[in-house]
Length: 304
Image (cartoon, rainbow, N blue to C red; front, side, top):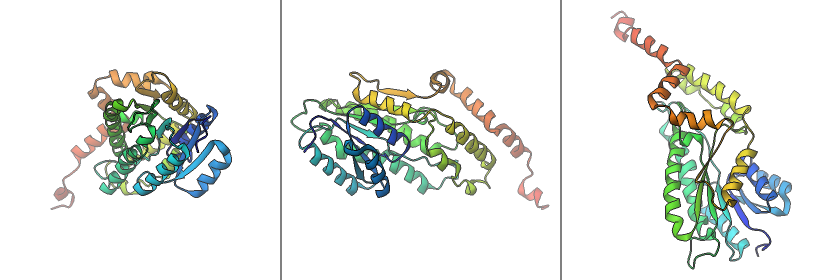
């Protein structure tokens, strides 16, 4: 039976980084938190850390059967009460130039960051109040998007695609769920210091090294890792999530970054062609084009 003194929230991808920070913030704010993880060891670690205010859910967002079992477990705990919130945080970033990115990698990116989010939402929506009769106080959905869902970067095209799509899906979902009174809020972080940068540093770019993008991709990887590790911590995103769940009238989009003007406002005001030119300059593509233009054709190079 639900602990009636606490409202419950589900957070996906709770093992580390932003997800773990969200769990900590919500527990501190007095919520009971269900956190989804994929490994039993992470479940035990989080349970030991948060004690009676936390319960792990073991599922991968791409596994529909496991997600459904997680929703059933939460329903049993609620015992007819309404879930206060769902934080769709789980996600990955698949880097690489789109021209050479294996299509299977793009499918995996979309399966986790987009399709998985809808699968989780569908499973937990009835507990949030998407049912008849209407819940007296419906819950709220928070989607973890990204600045990459507003501005696209080279070598992150697959990730950009997943987040741009998540933004559109979330807007449509919010308008559809108005009939139940369920709101949908998007959180849009910039660079945040999480373990994702350890993964980025070890990302396998070797299969792109022989392409024209190889050197530029390596430079961008190095820059992103260095900047990411000195970025603000995940706690500022957790604060935004708490605001998205509890504010009486939460903003539909909450950007979270070190310098909002440079990272959010200014790029939105600049002409797109200027943004393209600046990106081109930073990556050294102009020099590459000149090199390509003056390179001998294959027949000439081979002396044919």
